[in-house]
Amino acid sequence: MTSRRDFLRTASAVALAAGVARPFRAWAADLSAVSVPGKDGMIVRSYRFLDLETPVEFMTEWLTPVNHFFVRNHMFEPAKVDASKWKLTIGGQVEKPIVFTLADLEKVPVHSVTNAMECAGNGRTLQNPKVPGIQWGKGAVGNAKFSGPSLKVLLEKARVKDTGKHVMFRGLDEVPGKVPPFVRSIPLEKAIDADTLVATHMNGAALTQHHGFPARVITPGWAGAASCKWLTEITVLDKPAEGNFMSPGYRMPNAPVKPDEAVKPEDTHSVTGLTVKSLIAAPSDTAKLRPGKQEIKGVAWAGEADITKVEISTDGGSSWNLTELGKDHAKYAWRLWSYAWKPAKSGDYVILSRATDSQGRIQPEAAVWNPSGYLYNAYDQVKVHVQA
Amino acid sequence: MFRLSAGVLTVALICALGIAGAASSPNEQLPAGAMQEKASAACLTCHEARIILQQRLGKPAWTREMDKMVKWGAVVDPQDRDALIDYFSANFGPDQPAYVATKSSGAPVMKSRSKPKH
Image: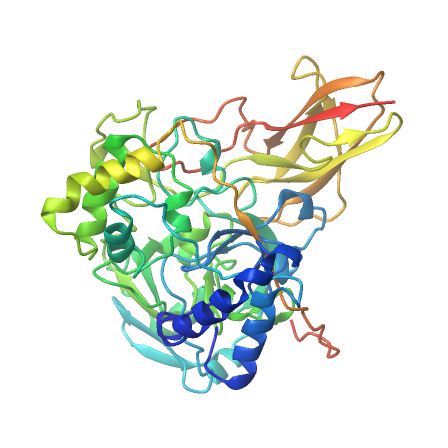
């Protein structure tokens, strides 16, 4: 999206255009829409920096198309990266620091992972009381097939020393003011999992600018913040990286806390794997339905675990019914589900969904409130009205 | 995204006029008030107004946000700090109605005819 330089260069021209147009706006269609080439119908949480949310009604496909995949940026996207000049370095606690070009990466065997990627703050706006941050609704999540070298293969070429414990990533995003850079690290054991990627492709095509072209980390099953975009530097450390986005950022209290209660850093832990969660894609909230057969459908995911069942309640939680899980499934991916429902009579209905995973985790009725609004995963809910 | 070429400027004009059917000026404004100008100067250099417009926070949380942003480079005269916190608390407090987000209008995505390599 807009890099800082692009924005400053052209802001005056666009302001001029908008000012000239004002008298004509009354008869124009959909004036509230914001132009984001390649991203259609997305909820604009922020334009600069770009943060786009997927409407939950779009979540009816196994693979989320790139133009409907959510975007989370903490900083300005880099100006268009010249792939022929792009380099990836690996240094720190390694025997042989190494530099890769994109051509070098293309010689490394390709590994693919279908990953349900979710922003740690997805659902933040559903927290009560409200907490600061991008006020994501339900749709900072998507499921895509990512492809590229396993990070493990690249680290093996650099030969990690015995002192190497964490692997830190730095991207090319541009940092404004004195904002701390978006630099984070993951433990070595996750970094050398064969499914952790330096991905160059998404759903079979080269990564787009918004999704980290030319290469990004994919740390599957973990919150999206562990999957650095526009990757350019990998540093092996003897301890976790430091900085705002490691602490206090992306940390949760070990036990529930009250709003405005001070939490000591030692009483918190880093956000890593995603929780178990389901969303209802159809029918939409506040939908007016005709009597007769209805299909309730949606998605469910569980980070590093597998979804074992998704249940639906159409009576506000008094009784629950098993849904049918979709045929497509893969480790780390989300699972489609559907339920055939025939409402007994006209009236208002509260439809709830809850997922259960292979670790025995059950999506809870209420999420645990936390000061940053991370990992919200209460039952999903839509209210519909059936009218003859 | 935008560049000052004649073609892009024409597209921007067409979109703003509504002839193309979508796309308004992408950046929102902070609400009117005594501190609007100073808040805009302090905050909107680094990010746009939507990030503020969507928050619903009490005064203690706005105080923490203000002090964090000053640490991160927001230029605020110390004499204006309290008035800015009051401005944000009054306009974006917990009791304010929810912010309604806009949607994006994207150019059509061209499908590649070549078989994907991966």
